[in-house]
Image (tube, rainbow, N blue to C red; front, side, top):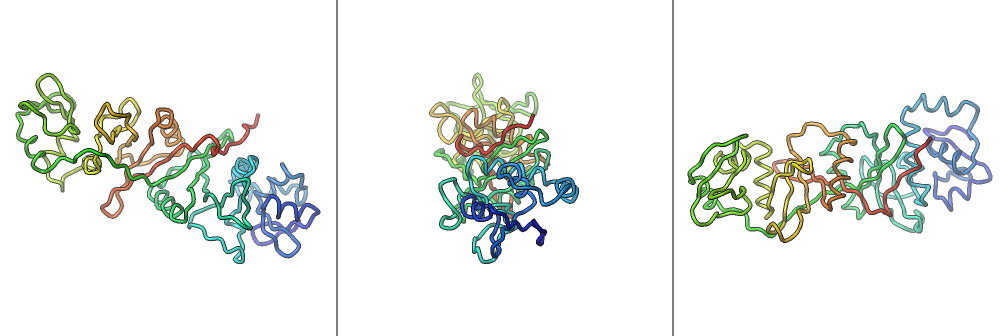
Length: 336
């Protein structure tokens, strides 16, 4: 092999097989351009020799992420997927992709020569902090191209997990409370109890099931609900803004304590079905991939979707980090 721009040109006997059957690298004349991470994959799984002695040691010094990148390639390619890295795509290949995408993935029975990619892929280390707004916008653009937005996460054990990134639009069938209803609740006799909660004494019928919890001959509302009812909108916290948005969407937010989130959200009257969504606190300043993956996995285990509210240009969006179906969970054997 010989160096070429940011990659390596291979001209050995396996060139055609690698290019045509495996769809790895990019043909340049009679040679095959491989990234350094693809060289590692081909060495480990296609019996290619290193370009020269000490090549591996030198390359990981140049690129500290190289081992992780090669592990991500392994997790995708060993099950049979085909993968094109954006790094070595040629202008003549005429494949569109979203800014920020690391690679394009095809299912095992498809090929870049004749098929559209199934997904666009990014990868991260489990300790990386998530830029949630950028991730959401990336996923929306990928979905606009008719593709799945996939992220693969690698940890310090070099184990890989896969998640789908979605822009969710949670909607319910419940009637949002009108201003008349909100004003009515605000005029009930109120008693301050613990943790900012309020006990409201009301008459024969409570006007909005989505607000508060029945207790004895009254209703208990938490601090967020109280601020939604009593404060001017200009004084709302992020939590109150999201609470109001969830109500506007016809949803019923209830405390999500037992799931480790701010709310669990029902789209129908409680008792009809389970709550499909878990909503995390919008004020959480930073989230790393390790904690997000754990939360998403727990949500998946109880048939719910983990959502992060994000305010962009005065509009609320909901970022979903979703565990994919079992046949799309790209992973790799843990090295002993």
